[in-house]
Figure 1 (tube, helix red, strand yellow):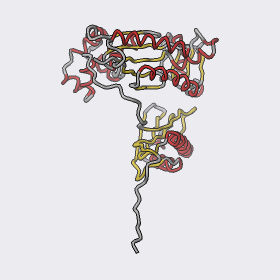
Figure 2 (cartoon, rainbow, N blue to C red):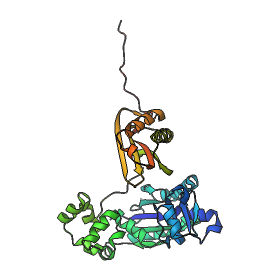
Figure 3 (tube, rainbow, N blue to C red):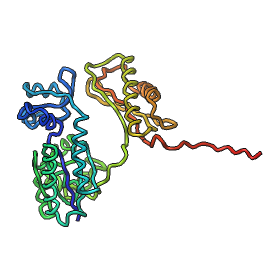
Figure 4 (tube, helix red, strand yellow):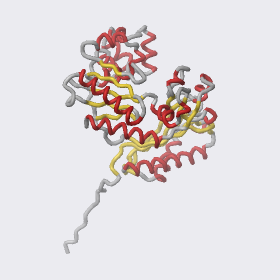
Length: 356
């Protein structure tokens, strides 16, 4: 049986800000773009969450919910430095670490811990080490697969520690509201509510055929996880699948020339990021979000991989012609490359030999 720990830092960005600035402790702190610039909440302190504020909420909405909220622009370099310290502690325990984001990761400690109870004790020591090293709290979940470990870490926050064993998994999942099932998005939850499915116990009553009809291929995954079955391994962090940059505009833009300029600017930023990571891409993608919040993407596969900013920009501008951008006001724009390969990969060349 595997022993997996899921570690999730508590309100990470906001907690770092409160750590660095003691005057912010105990106050509703929102890390994200300013309301007057059409910003979005990246994360917020637990004091702010009491007002119903959450990640991805428009900052203007957050301000209406909590007029006393303190908005702070993200300091990603600072967060990356703290994240690196935390990851060091992960790798001191086990080489099998799968980072999910800057503030959470799965750890497979099967080789280190004979039992799940040992894994729980290890997780508790890790929480204490993280606090001593950074001054920040983390929540942790321990179980025999990834889904249950993630579910456990969300169960008690902040600074919580939950163990789900084979013996108590069924009862735990039966009682769990479907909103708490990792992998079930808002649209899926809405569908289930419409047929009066409110808990894991209700979800378990649905047959594979019904779940497939409702959710397609995802139905099989839902059928498994509600029964505590998840065979996915903890995977080491690999190469990125894509490199992209996007920006939410201060005001809606209807000027096609400005949008083209913006695409070229984003393409240069993507190129710089790709060069830093050592990759080129064979596919170019653009993303637009209109004023009515409709999102569209357009992609093209190019003849040979590139990491050149102007070239990426040319393709991005050309892809605009495949959209209805002239008929809409744009609030967000993005450019990305995918189908990545190492920038230093040798090119195939025809060798010529002189036999005279």
